[in-house]
Length: 245
Image (cartoon, rainbow, N blue to C red; front, side, top):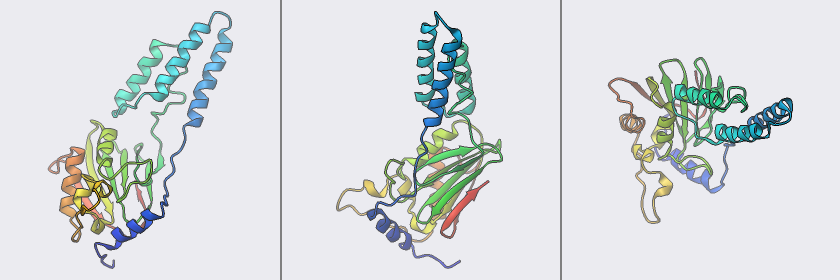
């Protein structure tokens, strides 16, 4: 492939930032909420008179299922859902429309962290000045992050994304971590202090070539995954969509 100048993608990203263009859109949770509320309504009709208190309890339980933060560990998450349903059998079954279900396919745009079940596929669209970080779990699942040079509105900055990825992985065993994208456009410190966090007059560090070892070191530290027990690869790849499976 043709070698890239270290500043090519940095300049391109800064121009793109000025246009405030983003390819990232979050999916809403409308269907999940509707399914939970509908389930509670049907249950109330079936129970008939004297179930008003039960219906109120169900609503409270549903709110906890949807609004409570998801545990990073899937085992803990499922145990949480099971205990909630056991404590209040009148609530809508959390397994029926649960936000904890891991899909087989996801698309991860800039500033996002998601995961797929074992055998699943992650798509990272339009990777130009970005880096993708894919964590391979020992059970075959994948947890991915799409780090961008500049923050996409409403999404994670480059100095917050590793912490979010670490939380999503939790204490599940990891076999490998893969970093791919515009390696030459990234200084390792961007994962620690985002470019936009520098004050006026401050000069962010400029990458001097492809610092694969530096990026692997910072990602290892950010994820809490030691390089002597987990395989780390850092690869510079051409612009375009990426997939991990």
